[in-house]
Length: 151
Length: 155
Image (spheres, rainbow over the protein chains, first blue to last red):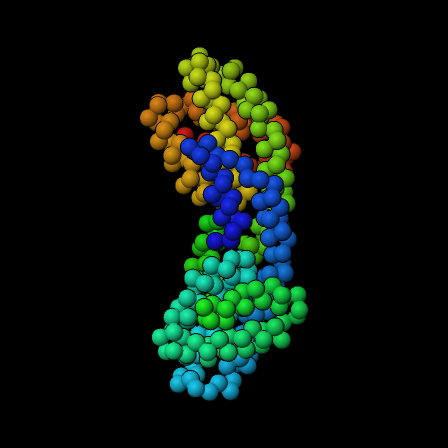
């Protein structure tokens, strides 16, 4: 869940059913999140429109992987979850929505290095395809993928 | 918004959200500034809102009841808690938050104490106090949540 929304839900309940107001700092974070929504939704739409070319560019010239179609599906899944995580400013959407699963596959196949390389290409292809301001919204989430696959 | 985001995360599992869903996020984002102003206005005027509501309750026939009269503190606490939960629900644009986190619990407590009708009177008075003290745009934002509270006690 988006961390600001989650704080409002949790802290807003207070103790013993009495309710509680959240701090000004939380309201400020909510305001920042809201102010960025138009840019986030534009980036989300741009990713959706360019998904096929981004994934194909990332997965081209892949050697050493038995099932390229499956790899394309997995990278598409990661790109979609990255886009949703960016839209909601919520990293758990990516982690719980596909990245943990892809990491398990990479480990089971002992192909972490290959997956790290492809996910770095996915990030590079995305950043090339989008305007810089949209790319900077996506980058924190896309960079989570190789970092997580390495760990 | 909490409930909406949870639903969207489920819907967005492996596919893109539709334009309607994205528009819901954009509409909420556009309303956030007014929601924050309303939240802060209620937070800073909570004592005055409750005092005004209690004045209104005191002219009602139920004034003689123990809940309102000798247990004035209990009535004020219920008003304060209701105000805070309604305000949080308004900030989140989330009626389900109010229902699940507060109203179900409150209804159980009030029923067990046989204060249901009296609580309705005090909540209606609080709703009126809100519409008197807040600008119209702010009280309009709060209305659905107070209506939900009052409807719960009318059932």
